[in-house]
Each structure stands twice: as structure tokens, then as C-alpha cells.
Image (cartoon, rainbow, N blue to C red):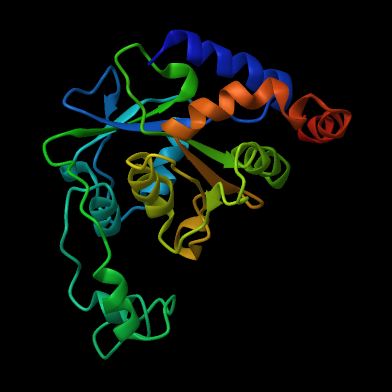
Length: 247
């Protein structure tokens, strides 16, 4: 991680967003990069709940063996198979399992499953650090904001600052961890990645405060966003009024 970029963002973030929460970051590494190996949860647990510790400043590293949620294992790239009857689980259910009813039919779920890409994470640690905890050896894939509407408005507009089509942000269907990790990873592989607005998954929303969504900026895009901050709308009287509300 470029130390100058790290400091540049922190100064600009404080200048334009006051005391709003810093983003957390995510990357793969063959080492734990001075993070703490996460403890296996007792029973089933959502990864989004676990990341609350990272938001408070604790750096955590995960492997397949310390993640209990099958969806998180898949979206982190540690598993590529779906649970039995996943098509019914995500839709209407059957006589074996209760359905979440997030997709209308099992047939539609099966079509969605065909387009899930594999992330080559096997044998690596998935490391999560808050932005201010990043070190020189860290190479984040994305910056993940847990943000209120006012903060989201600033991030959204900044992500579209250099976009002619006004589509610098996407919001694909998916789980909470899928939106902040899987989608951001895929976007970061592209020449012109888009930021991802997420955390609409009702199953994960109990792990975040109300009035909070996520905004995941792939690093290729985020670096540009940082450099745009001073010349953008963030320097206007309009944003100064919003900043007072954020504070």
C-alpha cells in the first residue's frame, strides 16, 4: 500500500466527511499481514457481523476453516459448490427446507447459479483491515464503506465524476458478503471497474445499523476517486452544508 495515498485519503476524508467512519479494506495474501486469525464462531454466523470488529479497528484474517457460512465461503472463493437444494432455499422452499423467497422460482435460481464465477482464493488468507491500519505490504482489492445516506450521496457522486454514461455505480443482486467482496473483486479485474452499492440482503441487515448501506470501491476506481476529491463538488457550499449534517 502506497503510504502517501493512504495519508492523502485520510486527510481528505476528514476534510470533506468529518468524523464519518473510515472504510475497511479486503485483500488476499499468503500471509496474515499482521492481522489476527479470526476465531471460528460458535454455530452459524454471518461474516458481515464479524466485520463489525474490523470497522472498530481490529485487523482479521480468514481461512476456509474459520468461516461457518457456506455463502461466505463461496463468495470468498474457498468453495465452489452450492448447498443441496440451494435453488429451493433461495426461492420458494420445499418439503425439506424453508425458502428465503428472494427469487421467484427455483428455475430462475439455477440460471443465476450458472453465472457465478470462481475466485482463486484457495490456500490464501482473506485479510480485512480498516484503512488506517493498512501497511506497506498490503495490497487491498477494494475499499468498503458502511455508510449513511448523506455519506453515500458523496461517494456516489464522486464515483460518477468522470463518467459520461452516469453509470459509475452498480447494485447487483446478491448476499451481503457477495456485494462487498465478490462483486468488488470481479470489478477490480476490469479495465474500467464500477463501484458497488450493497447490503440490501435482509438476512445480513441485522448485522449493520439501520440507515446503513455499503459502498465498495475497487481500488482501480478508488484511487481515481481520491484524486478527484479536491476538484469535485466536495469543495462547494452545497457539500459544506451536508458535511455539517454528517458531523
